[in-house]
Image 1 (cartoon, rainbow, N blue to C red):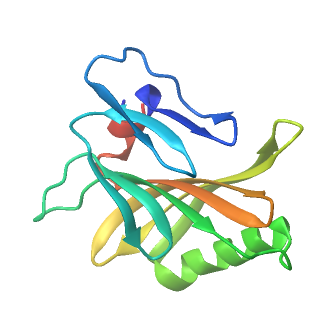
Image 2: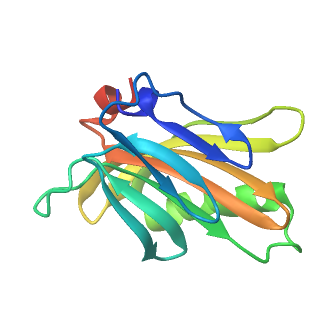
Length: 157
């Protein structure tokens, strides 16, 4: 549900289109622009290379479903396929009981993307991820949606 309404543009990439601009606001940085519901909690550069994170239900006692955008710079010596392979290896390394549900390359003729959906456990929470990654001018861009396994389907539909 949340993701169908999200409008996101990076380097001319439009992922989702908003239904109505009412109760929406826009985050504009030097690196991206994103429209999002006003009630989402936005954190700019919260750490670990993440450019921004948006939390749907920012509840400190529970996991907060979120969208985050990471930019990794200075990857000129690494091919996109090598980056994807390393990313897939890290899933098993960092997430207990992980399982890749779907992984595929796509593209629009100009940019090659890799989309991956997986589940696993992190800090004793059963989570579900959906990621899109791409390279542009020696940088890796990674857009990630993370939710609990219980709420994933309702949030993504």
